[in-house]
Length: 178
Image (cartoon, rainbow, N blue to C red; front, side, top):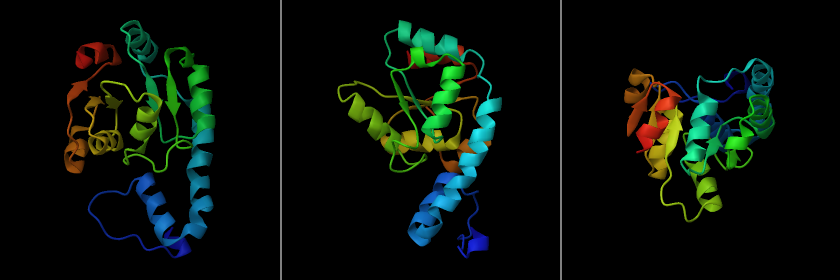
């Protein structure tokens, strides 16, 4: 961005990709496609090497058995999400997949929760489970509880993330939701 003449305001915390995209949209919209090509290239390479978090399938299966509707919300695009979810056989456990292709803004913006609420307008409760500060701030901005999976406590604190529950294993998710 700097090489293309975009000035990044000084700040104490590291810029997230979503924040950089928002800045480019406001300050240099002509660079949007070029900027987006960078994470797309990284994602295409990474999807081949992706690994499954321990007990992810078992946790999703348990959620379905308990009667929960399940969704994945990712800042990745649809191609990557579908490839990885199919590769690990997780689509069967999911009712909804929300990618950056379906949202107006990326996390930490809460727009993914808007998509979930539109799909499930009568849902009595929505909870975000995530492993990063962008997940936590998105949940906070949406007014829903955040369950932190193996969080970086210092990063969460520096970003002001409010955590409703912490889990170290995805197998702990049903108890955290109780």
